[in-house]
Length: 238
Ligand SMILES: C[S@@+](CC[C@H](N)C(=O)[O-])C[C@H]1O[C@@H](n2cnc3c(N)ncnc32)[C@H](O)[C@@H]1O
Image (cartoon, rainbow, N blue to C red; front, side, top):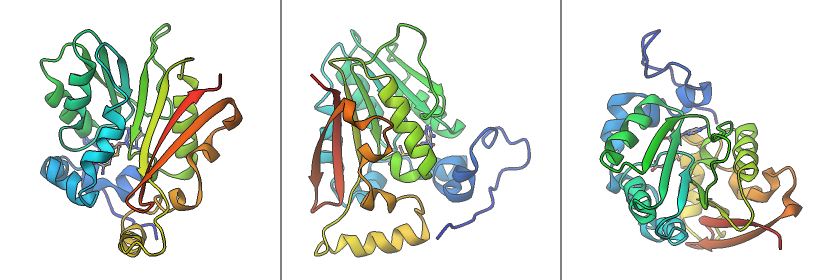
């Protein structure tokens, strides 16, 4: 069910300018409204939302980063993840976060202040194109796909693939298809119905299904917590 919520911002409110409709209609309370986003942006919210699987899911991403790497995280995440990823890349590397909402960009900028190898750019993960010649060792989407409509999922996956250089990696960490005996499946059914209208597609489709030319890549999948979550690492063939 699509839960229609009116954005609380006044017309012309800079926190709402240029923010796509799916964000203001569905996720205003989480990522657009600055007061709410401020309240929710902490490690405990991530821990509880992920049923205490936060550390191992973050490790699935962070373990792919080593010192000196160039990393692009395509959307901000509550809590300390961006600092941890930026610190792992280190001052010899580079760390970029993009995000579509002004308040999340502000949060990322605050968290990464003082790390001059880290940058934050307001951009749509489905459209952002780095300057000519800029390449990344790791490009990661951490729990973004389940929050965006189907056409945007495809745009994000294909945009990330278009910036995947030979020998480098894409990392997707997101929901998957919980086993029938996993009680969390039924909790998530209710959560998805009321709050996350784009999430359940992750249960029936593989991430590779969103790619225009999936056969060109190797898709290595690991699942967690009886199928509730997945990490998919994508590399070029050969
Ligand atoms: C990556 S998900 C992470 C969800 C997770 N529950 C957390 O702990 O933050 C949420 C972020 O995605 C951002 N976002 C949504 N659509 C986007 C898009 N098309 N491009 C870039 N960022 C986007 C939102 O603004 C928000 O900051």
